[in-house]
Each structure stands twice: as C-alpha cells, then as structure tokens.
Image (cartoon, rainbow, N blue to C red; front, side, top):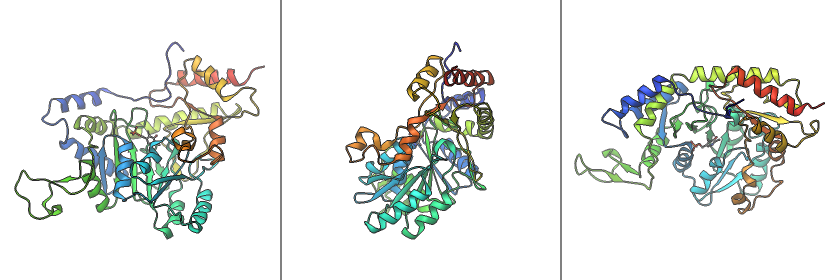
Length: 390
Ligand SMILES: *Cc1c(COP(=O)(O)O)cnc(C)c1O
C-alpha cells in the first residue's frame, strides 16, 4: 500500500461537521444545552438512568473512584491487560492497586483467578473496595459472575467500557450497569465513537450521579438543596467538596451526539471486518480473538496472537515487517504491572503470567469503520507472506 493504514481512526461525516459548526455559531461553547442532550442520548442508548459527560475516560475513571469514596488505605483491583488509566485512577485517590490475571481465551479478567484471589484476600485482610473490570477489545467481562463473586464483600464495580461502546452483554447494552455501579466510556478518536477527547460515566444511582456532577466541576453547586445554610441569591454558589475541572465542551458533545447516531452502523462495519479476518486468518498460524456467546463485541480492537512455536520469527520481526508494509499494527497491551512506575510500586515480571504470555504474542491488526476491503485483503496477504515462508 502506498498509504499508511492506521490500526484505528475516526470516521467523521458531513453531518458531524455541520453539527459542530452550528454549535460554534451558537451562544454556548461549553456548559450549554448540548452536553445534556449528549448525556441523555447516551443514557437512553444504554438504558442507564444517568450519564455524566467529562473531558476524557481517564477523568471519568478518576471521578468514578471519587464517587465511590476510594481513598488512602483502600485497594482497587483491575486487569493487567489494559491501558494504564484503568489502574492509575486508584493512585490519584491515594488508594493502592492490585491486579487479577486474565482469562486465556477472552483476555479479560479471569473469573477463576478472581475467585482465588478473593479467597486469599479475605484471609489476608486485603479485600478491595473497588474492582475495575475492563472490557478488552470490546467484549464485555462476565459481569454477572463478577457481581456474584464480589457481592458478599460489598465490593463496588466499575466497568471500564472504553472499548465497548455499542456492545452487548447478555441481553443488555454495555453501559446499562445491570451488574455494576458505574460504567465508563472513552470517546478518543481510535475508539468506537469520538468527541476528539471525551468520556462518559454511566450509573443507575442518583447519589453517584450527583457526586459525579459535583466533582466534575470543582465541587461547586448552585443547587440550594445541597448548600450549607441559605442561598444568598441568584448569583450564589457553594463549594461543598473538592472537585476538579473535568468538563467537556458543547463543541465536543455536539460531535458526540452526531456520532452516536451512527453507532449501530459503526458496530456493524467492525463486526463484518472481524468476520472477514476470522475467516481469512483461519489457515494461518495465529490465534484469532475468541468470542463468548454471551456477548456482542463492538470490536474496538482485533488482537491476534502469533503462534511463535510454529512461526520461525519473533513477534517483533512480524510486527516490524507489517509496519514496513505500511500497516499500522499496534500491541495491546503492555501489561500494566511491568511498567517501570508500577515496578517501583513493587510489582514484578512474572506476577501475572497469563497476561504476560499473551502480550509476548499479541499484535492488533487495523480495525476501524473506514477500513476498506482492499486494505483488509492487503493486510491478510501481507501477514500470510510474513508468516508462511517456503
Ligand atoms: C482509551 C482508554 C482509556 C482512556 O481513555 P481516554 O479517553 O483517552 O482518557 C482508559 N481505559 C481503556 C481501557 C482505554 O482503552
């Protein structure tokens, strides 16, 4: 290919552009009515009671932990197979982090490993206050099983659904929070829909919603019912907690609202591409992403594992050859606990062996709504020529 094929990218159409232009001409660039509309549309899509939009998913995760009152002395568990934001949110709150190894097939947090670790944690007085379940590549974790395992300890559950906008778990949309306290979406350009930068917190709890709105904007309220004493007048506001400026703009919310109209089309396209990959790669020495019948993945990523014992090449060699052919492959994820910052917190190579073994073989092939059939054929043919040498 003459052009570079990215692993992920946005799909912006004329409607998206026109919507944003209209907002630029309106009275509100931020804190206006479009943010409410975007929140309501997202909540409606997911059949969640509330949605609170913020500047990115990292802020949404931080906010989620704040609303659950995670703090010093508390522990948060997540998957090591994720972006660092899923665990950094605990550290922002002064809590500590631990990980649960992944399932060999789904690459999500293993329910068996979770059960074992809870058993150990109970004996050692290390039960976490919060678990962040990451829906890797767009396929939901087994939330029902996770809820059942954690209910007796009253552990709060956050779904990091950054990859899974538009996906389903059992009969419900991801984001419905049927088996969790909070779900988080990311609207970064490589994700399913985009607002440039953006994130959303979904919940069915009135209390969590109220706190999220408060901490999103400095801990300031204009609601007389939340104030200490009387309001002094229409200008009056009170700071009743310590929050941040995590707000999203109306410009971004408008883009999100417009993108949300195409979420079904985006998922349909991604799922069709996945079917093509599954079929075309079935004869190659790679493991394609296994799908549980319980879920409908939104396929943010298409991660394959190279069968290194069959192929006489390293993962790095395969990766570099694909990049040389202008195919923008990537690797998801470098296990979080192997990052220098986390090693300094005491984690070591070998702590989560299933995740580490997966990482050694993983490559994410391009997957996005604008990927063409010609590009996909080129990707498959190139991979074939790299993996199968006479
Ligand atoms: C992208 C991503 C995030 C962070 O999203 P931002 O919107 O960029 O802050 C968090 N968790 C996971 C799993 C992600 O993929």
